[in-house]
Length: 315
Image (cartoon, rainbow, N blue to C red):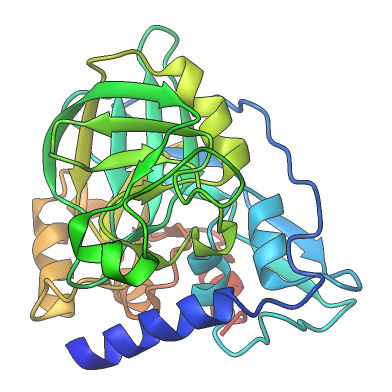
């Protein structure tokens, strides 16, 4: 399994060097979007959208344009051609999220989800951005850390283990620098949150352990985050949330193969959930089996619920 994952990681690196000429030709921009939340009972943010595929669109364009990583669309449309999706087709875009569990409500990074959440307790809002993570063998660390260094236009000091590959010891700021325009290191050694010169890697396992963000997202996040900000890196493929009295579950694949029995893990998580008695187990197990990253309403005794139908038709 490890050799297969390494081969796939190598394949997408090669693929990234051979992108179609139209890929990422668009000048992508972003703005700060703050979602209100309440940790007690309003922990599903955003709302789903529908999108009609335009000529020259790729799934990577669609994901990035909607603030998603590539994994969000690939999980939902595993059989769709990423480079030549069917133009004119109307597709569901999962632009809503269950908030991850948190101790500090500052920055939370959920590795299997490949997503970052930035909480502001002062106004009870949260921002969220897709990320790229480490390949197997260079996994992102798990634990509680804090921001201990920030700089714009960083120089990349190439790790000794990678110097033979790149043939250099350092790379100055510029368009080819893999750190992008901003970096925020945290108290886990050489790991950091940074931009990227290869935005196709957001929503993939591509890095050597650092967290990559789209250039337009790191430029938004960087000035907002003060030194000493707490960072929680968690590994949680199954999240529970509530909104307007309804219960949602959002599940993702076990990207680092940490879980021996996913179904049993899911049932154990459900047993620990404080509102487990109100969860319909059939709906729950369907959502868990899909592992497509779509928040699904699993509340018991629903009068009318199209959420399962909506996620099933995308397979």
